[in-house]
Length: 383
Image 1 (cartoon, one colour):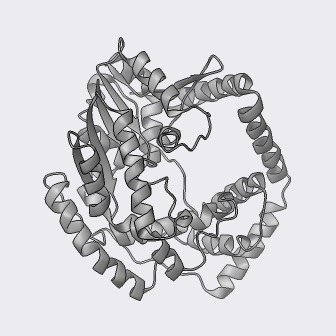
Image 2 (cartoon, one colour):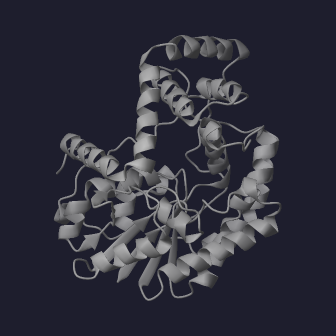
Image 3 (cartoon, helix red, strand yellow):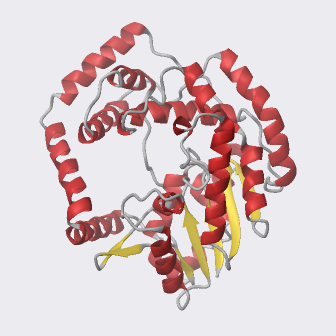
């Protein structure tokens, strides 16, 4: 089986790519290309991303609670007679486990990372595997990662992954060593071709992640009659409400309350005059650029897609306004007024019910998942 393994990186349009592949799964299958789902309790579940597979390879079992062996059996058994090619996509392959906040040193991180990649190699053993990933310039990725971590910090159990910009940079330093990470992939999967594409708009086909992915994956959208490539997925939070979330993160909330808070902040962000861009102080930026120089030399010499080049800062970087203390205070008041609305209590009950069904009534959850799938398909404009 020929396998295209799209390993991320996070914050490079991966969610949009995965949503597109999921929505077009049936048409891809007609063209002999499988984007695998799984069956749980007799019901077909669209994984969307294959992050659960990457986690299972490391021994971490999350929804839909299958082992790596069970994923392998379903994927390759189902694909043998129906497809000539498989696409697997999950940013947890390049990132994910081990988590930098769970290790004591860079050496411990890279020891764990190599073990994961070794497990990935075993998972795809016997299959002709190509590896595709997008790499965001290190400064841009770190800033986007900080914003995302602040956004989801309350869902990370008791981990204070973000305390301040300096601490966050020092903790995330291993993840900025792109060259070292890709060398591990090549050493553990020597027969795989690795192709890295800079996630910079000016270097993407048509300036968007989905169109670029179709090009790099050699997928003929017109021939396969695939749907529209303009999708909005995982919308970010605007700058002043990221500061609100920093304040909220000083307390502890249940996971369902956290989901409702995030939904509220995303809703408020739609009317914001601020962008979603998070900017690091100049001194940290300069340190990241220095770290990236050696790493990107490795990437550009060994792995970069021909005709592209990776730098520490993208050429599409733009200045962004920073909210004043008065604007942050006003944003806190706006959030408190909005979050008092009963719709967020209803939302919390919905999150609670869905979590219960995922863990205790998988066939029922699978049925609801199918209804949601039908709704998404009905509202998605196809070619």
